[in-house]
Length: 351
Ligand code: GLA
Image (cartoon, rainbow, N blue to C red; front, side, top):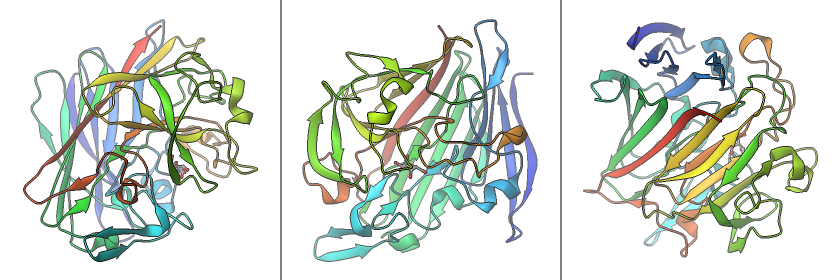
């Protein structure tokens, strides 16, 4: 039945209780989100014959999530992606963050928002079942300044779209960059080499050997990163996409054509045998494209699926990496009195 149900998903080692919310829309699509990390654990989308299948990687139980995983379905904050050397300056003061992806800071630090228990409440939305997750991040948490009130509303619309609406306020200036880090595999098995991708971007932020932006914005033309003029199967050019052996594949940030100017369709991912088509819409200026290069088969996920390299792809809508240190990039600073707001949708369509 369409609506929202709530159930217990167990307890963390700290004793904190974790709940899981199941959103069902009027067409029977299902999204499950748990309060640990406001994490999307399942998204069941129809294939070309109307059969539903889970298109997200993740785990069967809370203990597996708690053991540690590379942000599968997590809500990431305060700052998704990298901050160079884990430092940024505001006025005269330098803030020091964890360098949990040496030598850089990644995805909010050692205990980012993906590892916090969020509060949740069912909220009314005109176009489908919805749940709001909220988290209060204390001044100094993970080295960041200010008390931050963060929220994300997940709505599973009757148009078969999972929408995430993020908001945040602060009492001290602080960089904020929230995203969802879902890993998609549209056929629910194997690798994503056969998935076709279109990205509405003609340029990307050049990364150094540790994937930190150099500050240069380069054209995608005649590179393996051109999914605009040459939408292609991901596997076609993946060995030339970059990375340090053995972590080869795509891990880069697109500069979206729509910029931060409005809400637009920025990527389309499809897979021929299932006929599934995932459309990504956002108001964010950047899109991190990551092909699970660090997965090596040691993580065993839902139903015993061994997550080998390239089992899934992430399309993380966000501001550019290292924006707090890159003057020419769009600003990620949130000031007291302002409200950070951003919206992303995953539309579950068929080709
Ligand atoms: C992001 C990064 C990758 C990797 C994953 C998590 O997508 O860009 O380098 O850290 O998160 O494993």
